[in-house]
Amino acid sequence: MSVEIRAIEPTKSELRKFTKFGISLYDGDPYFVPPLIHDDVNTLSPKVNPAFDFCECQCFMAYRDGKPVGRIAGIINTAVNKRTGKKDLRFGFLDFIDDDEVVDALFKACGDWGRQRGMTSMVGPMGFTDMDHEGMLVEGFEELGTMATIYNYSYYPRQLERLGFKPDAEWVEMAVTVPDEIPAKYARVAEIVRTRNNLKVLKFTSRKKIKEQYGEALFRLINEAYDSLYGYSPLTDRQIEYYIDMYLGILNLDFVTIVVDAQDQLVAVGISIQSFSRALQKSRGRLFPTGWWHLLKTLRGGSDIVDLLLIAVKPEYQNKGVNALLFADLIPHYIKAGFKYAETNPELAANHKVQSQWEYFETRQHKRRRSFRLPL
Image (cartoon, rainbow, N blue to C red; front, side, top):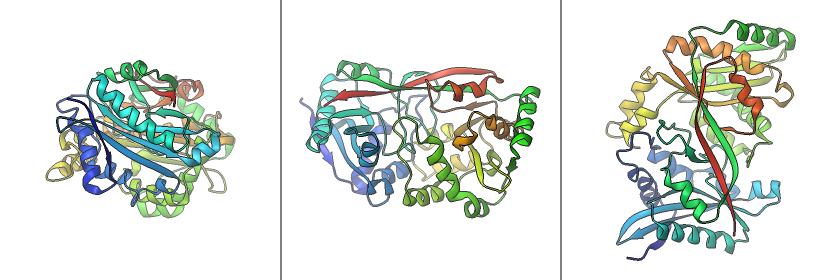
């Protein structure tokens, strides 16, 4: 039968159907890590996500014989388009069966929606902002996914290439072995950086205190550090408040390191978190009835993998070895927690300075992902 495309209303029930399809398609896949349904529904809800202050979004689902066979979200980030001078339609939350007719229908619906609003190019997969998942997996299909990245089947990039999409950006990911101790040369570099720049490393045991003293400054630092990166969408005041409440409540503060200068001004931050990949797989995207238990077990030490969520360094301190100061503090905590290796999550393939920070460690480049672009 022919493919039917339905525009999804941004109600909780409709967005749940949209999100749940993106999980059910991978049922039984040992590498796919589902999101929490609640989190994706909130991301796609104009009533919840402050990114809708400057973004438009329309979700579509493809059906055949009454059964869902694909989904896509079209997103127009007016803030980024204004910064770049482009008229880009982002596509994200993309999932589909390996069927040309389904793929054609999804991208036609999304492209028509963007074209009607004056967009001239389609690019993705991307979310509303860099706080969302981005980049289609093109290598590493037999590697466990992470909570911060997209997992997709190997036929996805082939289908985009069939439609005429061309690569627009590329990221790589590393698995970094956690050493038994801080490498001696690395420790010396960290100490030199600390004394030369008169820097201090701060640790917190209270989420309330880190929120009060550095919560807002932390996200403003991210804006500074990431400003020139591919497709970056600066966080607004409302987004900063939103993400402070979302993330600071779940972090193990042993795995968060802050570096400040002599005036206690924020210079750098390293935020990592124990991997929730296996716990999310067991939860199947649901907190209830038992999903919460698997997540709680991980919080209490049920993982041997640590995810490096983000590293941000103030621009004037970049390329001065401040990263060594961050990891010289974090590594002992990783060792104590029993972590065997760290997931770097996506780093732009062309950003060799970022990748050079792993030269003192045993690494394996195990994943690669791309964004793709097509004129409308």
